[in-house]
Amino acid sequence: LKPFWLSAGLTPALASRMRLRVVSLSGTSVVLEDLDPTTSIGEIKHKASLELFGRSGVSTAFRQLLRGESELVDEGLDLAKAGVQSGETLTLVSRRASVLATGHLDGSVRILST
Image (cartoon, rainbow, N blue to C red; front, top):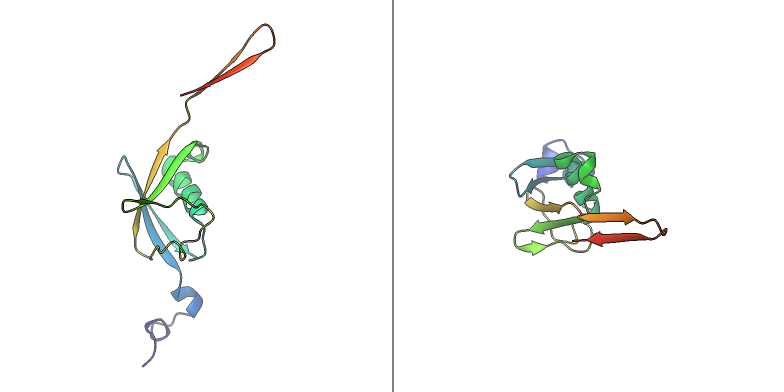
């Protein structure tokens, strides 16, 4: 018997590519295709933010990537080591930073964050 990927005419490299769906809390989603299993969690956060929110979403201060009820915390960890399988749906939680900077006549600057 041949492995399924060989009978389908795929190479081992193509057979190991991944496809993920990332959904935001607002319900919008993006499908990330042709991902390598060694793609990092940080890269997935960045790609999904860019696709879901545009360039302004990339600079978002607070982003969490959830797999079910668990947060994928280690941004350096790759998909395979995190146990993420092709075809899974992940949730991206994103919130813009609330920062106010004020300049004063005496030359001081105050940064307030909420």
